[in-house]
Length: 69
Image (tube, rainbow, N blue to C red; front, side, top):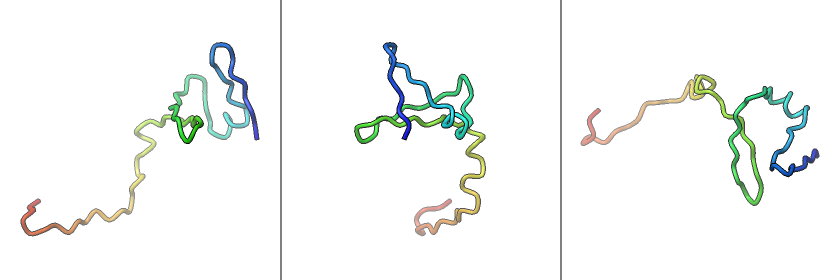
């Protein structure tokens, strides 16, 4: 487990190994989520990264007779 220290300016340094695994570059945006008494940093992905996420999903929906398309 890696630990980091909060600076007097409330900054932390993300360890090199983590930056490399996540391919974080200077200027990358991270979303901060408070979760279960802790913090979670999630990289913000561009919308293009979500392309194909639902590929293969069945979009056929059975509708009631009174609900036209």
